[in-house]
Length: 396
Image (cartoon, rainbow, N blue to C red; front, side, top):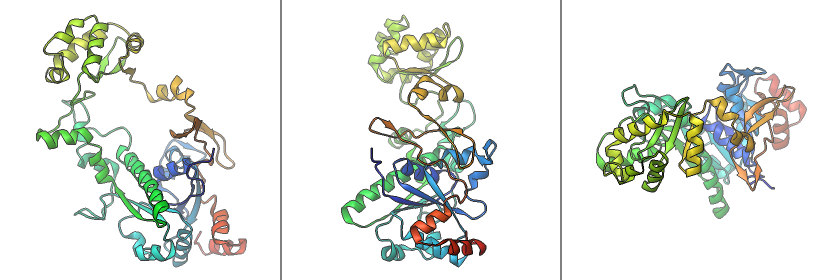
């Protein structure tokens, strides 16, 4: 099948995680993603290890499939000139520079209007272009702290905790990809591109979701519930005879089934437990009763029993268990790829699908500058001699 973004050229001026993840998703959808990297060093994450494969960090490999790499020194006028010529050929431009960087180089709204009027631009920043922190760099860990996400993560009597991955970066990258897709749709309608902005600060507040709504409606400060839920009970992890189990009961009908399966159909008639609101008010009591029963049998017993009854439940897996599970294998989510001249290695594949087909890895994560000559010849018509001279001058 034809990929949704076939024929769309993306100039990727990003590094680290939020930006590279967003452009990788666009590449998964068929876009030709050209990653512009610093001459000599490239994306910071190329060195973020161990672990490494062929001197390339696993971190970099995990968020840069389906891209081509071009090195460019934008610290020199000739490098800025080349960047401008590449920008003029782009359908999409994604950057995560500090606010004002592209305009400072001469690529402001007026420049794009004249030289690349159909380009859809998305800028990813730490705090956005307005407000007292506009222009400051943003870091996932700091935004998890400042947004309140850490204050609601962790055990009730423990310290605030960050999520185990850079979740604000990841969600910001998703919002950036959504913005680009919206921009392309707008361009289809108007014939012109547009400028979009996403930032880590606003994303992190969005991620508070129902917790923010709870506070804004009630004025009651949210607190930590460990693996519990502030609005739904029972909705948490429990200890079984041989491991941890997550159970998610979303409504009163499911609770009645759970109570019957556990041999306590009377719970669904008990005023303290009959409704979700009552269970939230008496969470320690009902959680204690359920937990005492679940400890008597091993995890697989409860997983199978709950599955037959239609009660949402699952084991709390380790990462190796999750990546080797029958569902992961059955969905074909682990790909084996190889960089130019390198040995094969495994990567997590794309979660996207069109039709029934998995999204292919059309290009493995690129080596630094691997496609510089090809892109400059293809887009700008530069010959081998011109490219060699630029390389001797330290531009490439």
